[in-house]
Figure 1 (tube, helix red, strand yellow):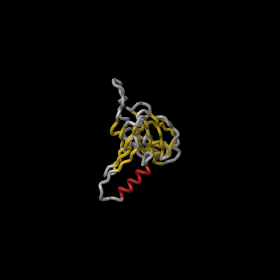
Figure 2 (cartoon, rainbow, N blue to C red):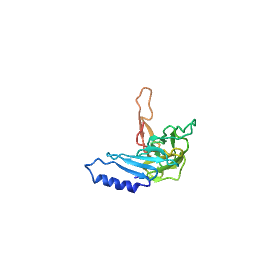
Figure 3 (cartoon, one colour):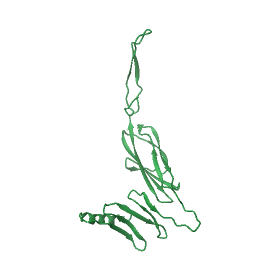
Amino acid sequence: YTGSEGALRQALDDLRAALPNAMVSTYTYDPLIGVTSMTDPKGQTTYYTYDHMNRFGHAADLDNHVITKYEYNYKGQKGLGFDAMQAVIIAPSHVEINTDQVIAVDVSAGSGRFFYEWQIDGQPLTESGSSFTHTFTALGNYPLQCKVTDRATNQIKIVTTRIQVTESLTTPKLTATPVHSAAGMIVNFTLTGIAGGSGEYI
């Protein structure tokens, strides 16, 4: 439950749950401003925001994807007209333990004025830029998340990926049998001592 009315929305959902055979729509409302959320009979919630003059700004779903947006301009003034923000995390799927790794997020469209919030394994990081260097000191499969906020439009985009941390790849040993051979003889080569890395070798 997001926003300052989370407790109220929880109570409304409890009411809906108590009426399983009814088609219930619920609303939250700020006096003198307008409707702040609407939940339909299927349980899908739409959130409504307003600007500093209490004019309707935009409607968004639970994941903060903008559904409808209004802009207010003087006659002849060009609006902001930003395209919907898109983001993708740039990071390797497998990394070796105790090695520095550069992690970044690529953001397109939007206003270009972004704020970044990073998490690794559910723990917030102090980094607030679009890229940073991180060293994984323990083996495991780590969820990575970046929350990008457009400062101009308040649009939020959350992107995730996972990083598998493995042991360092060992140097294998190549042996030949026989060691000495004449022209035309068949020689068998064997590679041993392969360990570490992702375990998927070519």
